[in-house]
Length: 318
Image (cartoon, rainbow, N blue to C red; front, side, top):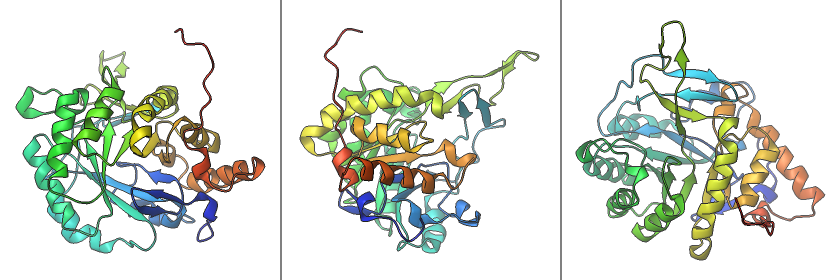
């Protein structure tokens, strides 16, 4: 499918042209170069690539083990290992081919000041858009994650909005009480789009040593196990985004064309692919073909016609 994507798959996302609704998720493809070494892979098969989470200063990340396979998923606690924003902007971005696909920076930080500084640095770069990872611990606020509190989330978005005109995509955490309220506050603060959802917190235990398998004790759970939760969260956030025309990247456990279609119907404009890449680097080609087959079978002219078309049942009780 490389170089021959159908116009039916193209979407407009925050004013950016995506040749496919598929987005490669942050942390799964390094800084955009890792999968170019895989025979048959092409950046042209996806609408956008989210680069690895980037902080102000370089970080070594967490102690091992950092990744652990679970039934229907994967735990990871990499700890934002990255070379720092200056090296990313000065040395890595110039090596990327912006004619092939769109590239989205992922801004991470421990303080508002760090979010501001990293966002400002990416604003003065060729990057197409900026994703704000608000699931990092807020050191100045006693270790509470920014993304689990609507006030803190809004403050991060507002801080980043003040230093860039590039599209801002806020990655929402599922580890919170009311994700729709958080989305509403982030829209008011200036978010242009959302990525829904980030990983769920989880743990695995070595029963012989009676210690956590992950060196950080806990990690983020991704993969098919979280897809039902992610679908519900996309649906909930879509209720808030609909009136404002705010697009959503739906993500969490996408491994098949049917998964991607579910996210689109639930309210997503684009669909993130992450954990599946670890066992099938060419999976996006198959998902693109499956989406096209569905559009043809249902006589739909564009993938846009699927977004937010969920028809709810009449029942409302839990």
